[in-house]
Image 1: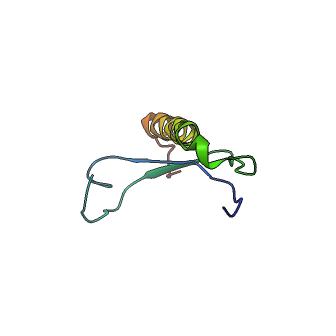
Image 2: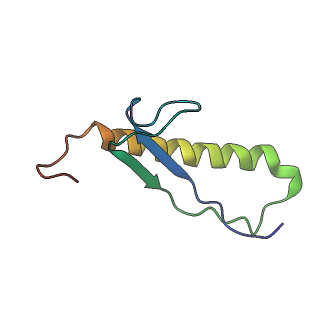
Length: 79
């Protein structure tokens, strides 16, 4: 209704750093990937399933990129 863009984000970290569910976030490396904003200017209410699928696909792509970056070794001296 506001016409604001949706920004997909992927967050990846190892399980001790960012546990699933409720829990304390611990020190560690967290990779965050921000995707391109998705314009909502043309979205219609009867397209909810289609638009939800688009947002999920974009967020999934960001998560894949974040995980791929997490798999790379850290450079000496940190990121």
